Length: 110
Length: 117
Picture 1 (spheres, each protein chain N blue to C red):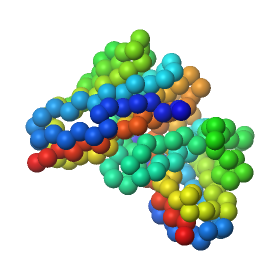
Picture 2: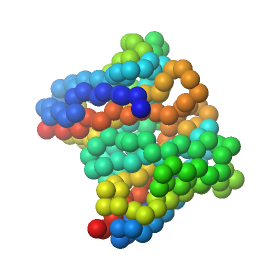
Picture 3: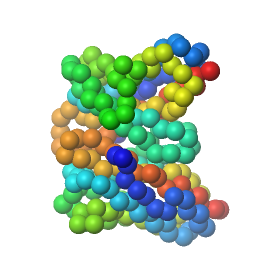
């Protein structure tokens, strides 16, 4: 299978709490990207971390990358109800293909 | 960010007919476009990689004669689902990457929901 794995599959938290999602991928990568998808809609690019980077921040988002474990995590701090969506990691391989993880469905309760 | 336009956003067709989905990069040139398929509450599965002026590269298990991909220009790729059947009903999303620059960010269309009845 081309897919990476994400956990948890679903996450429900209270507004204001932090949300952490984990992603594991299968092959060596050029970079890893995180995307958000609202129900039935297209994808919104959130953040990209290159293979030689270990941590990156963007607003309330913090991404880590551990290439030795082939894993990444996405932390959303001070969550808001509007953050409710599905979140996918996507690994860009050397063959220039972008493969998605299985996704985490986040629900932020107001 | 760059804009990728996908059309139509939804389509209903009869079993046995063919459906064409267009993916356009509006403000950049895309040497490479990608086509994904997504079933409800599941992730995106890469179907094929489309390169301008050459044949598409299909992922394992994807029938190239059923899912015809044409990338005739640097701003347009099309996916045609031929002789569609109900099991082809799905959400199809295209993605395009800029041809120049160091960014490898991919931009996605809004998707096409195909329902075959």
